[in-house]
Length: 197
Image: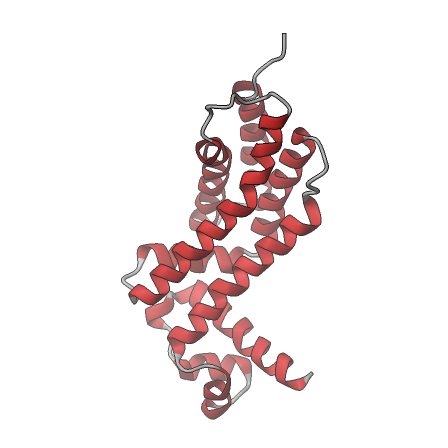
């Protein structure tokens, strides 16, 4: 148990520092000080600072997948699954501001290709987890057989991500983010769901 606790303390310290200062402006020494561990302890769990960042990306991805597992049931009708997906985005944003700030940092900073590739890989994994929601909509006749499900999913999730990123970048209050997301959710359902005659 101590092993897990120590590793998680290092990750918690790193996520806070990197989200506050950016990856390049955080030294391993600072992560160790914040976590209350020595450098040899950090290097026992992680090869280097880049390895810490890679694990933070994986951890953020796991948290998102856990929320999908808890909030989306594959046997539910499309609108119920869509509501669950919407809730996943809100809950993830509210509980993981620091991970989102790191994701922004990864996208905008000159980082090693290994980190960029890992970030892309994790984004693709999320897309694969979301596609079954839109497949259910097709089964229910809400989307046509020729509709591109990846584009439909992106039309729903990309603006949600945009509002969340904007909130994190501008340090807007959560209430404002929730209002923007709720308005968009209503807009999307009104404009993208085919109405049955």
